[in-house]
Image 1 (tube, rainbow, N blue to C red):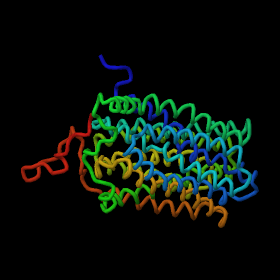
Image 2 (cartoon, one colour; image 1 turned 90 degrees about the vertical axis):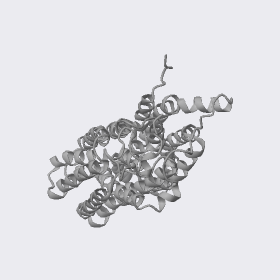
Image 3 (cartoon, rainbow, N blue to C red; image 1 turned 45 degrees about the vertical axis):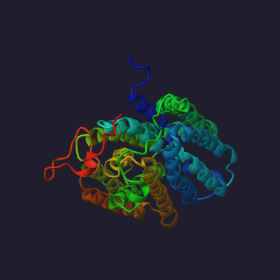
Image 4 (cartoon, rainbow, N blue to C red; image 1 turned 180 degrees about the horizontal axis):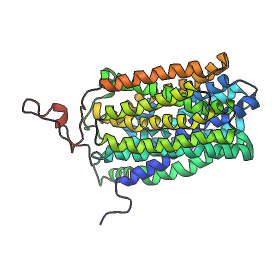
Length: 431
């Protein structure tokens, strides 16, 4: 008889909950509803305000490889639980301490550092360690939490701003993160890890928390591999475009005459699309060569940006946000999945950290480019054209990726000259 919560799919459930209040929904995708209140309260322009999000996301990107290395060495639980607590406290402190644009930037940077333990990294590593054959679907379900958060967190923040002001909204976001993410990580995502650590400390088990014999490249090998850089640049470009649009879709629509509450619904619609995109992409990449799936999904934000460029009609704002959300919905699970299939699992945490760092750099630069475009040129149009070009680059890079190096255990590679390729002789990653 199996123990309660012993199924690896409970890790997926916990990850879904944790990522609903992850760094993206809480720190990044609520930012659009804070732009105007912060600009007015701190007496500055949108370009300066957008610099705070850039600082936060770049800080997350810089910190994530180090967090990944620590997770590879010490396990997810010991690193992510303290990070969740510190991230939650940092968001609450934002409401108490911010008095100027400079303080806002510093606070976002500090929150960004500890947010690296509440990114998809620990959740993706936990899932990839216990699920192989249906890894795409598992990652899709888990990272759909980001979509749920993108749908719910901006509306929650907007409601709090209307009720208790922007300072109270930051406090509320921090409290909600602590209440949801901490029990999800401790009770579901890392519950099995905690049991293995306890057994190992009592010499009742020899199961390591971070096995070093998993197939794959070391971090040093990955950094010299062209596929690593193709993945990094592609996801940088997608993040640049998608986050740029998402962070400014609310002010863009209100500039076109849409009330703030109605404009916020565009983020909600994008969140729904993000959830749908995650689930569809996760289901597809278990069945179709993942770069083809990526190519299809990365084309959707290109159409959405085209709608924003082609007309000033505010009614196109929500369809554009939906298309961007569908494309954004595929990115995080694709990062983890493509990394595991092209670069392996040996140094998953550290390599994912590098890829996510570059992804976060794009996520921070996108809103900054949009903000500067509006501040300097009084228009989002030039920035939107630049973001369209970035998406074209991402599509080309995905089209150039070759066959997997580390294939799913249920899909052995075709015989080549009478023998399976060396990478496919690696042991299964399933547990």
